Amino acid sequence: MADVKTTIINVLMASDTQKIRSFSFGGKGFGPAVFPILKTFIDSGTIKAEYDSSKSGMAEYDYGNNTLYLGFTEATSLTQKALIIHEATHAVYDMVSTKMSVADSESIAYIVQCQYARANHSDPSQRLMGNTAAKDKVFELAWAIAGKLLAGEKPSLSECNDMRNAVSQHPYYMGKAAADAGFNG
Image (spheres, rainbow, N blue to C red):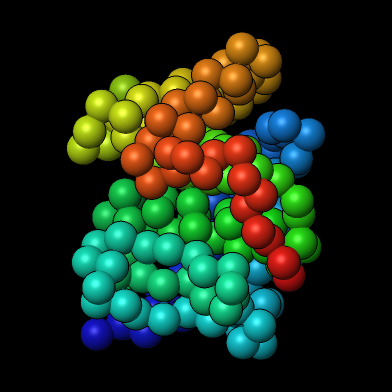
């Protein structure tokens, strides 16, 4: 069984992450240069990395205790690596106590996740997908925005608003999309 901390660090430090393009969403910037910095927080124990069997193939970042939880020990698929990137994005914003809504936080994380997957997939038309219509809409829109970013284009305000709206309809975030994401350092 692989060490979860090593699994996360290996994904963060791989050259694949540097294919992600820097962008701004809702006035919040993101760029892949933050991943080596995040690695130092993980190495120092400021951010913990733990296996949680109850996550069963999923992952989560808990800003309350600064812990990245994985429901797997090895990232053997592009989907698993992209999921680590998604949760690491939340950890980045938590470490600098960025104030933003849940909708913006999730929108950014899904866009980063989709950029990573799209840039590293042999067939970029084969996008990440959700298992319900509401979950899939988030991936559909994030995949399209990721494609624009990877092509050097910026998403329109309308595309960003559509992304926020899709997140607000996602069953995990419904009813709390407008709330503060809670990033507290």
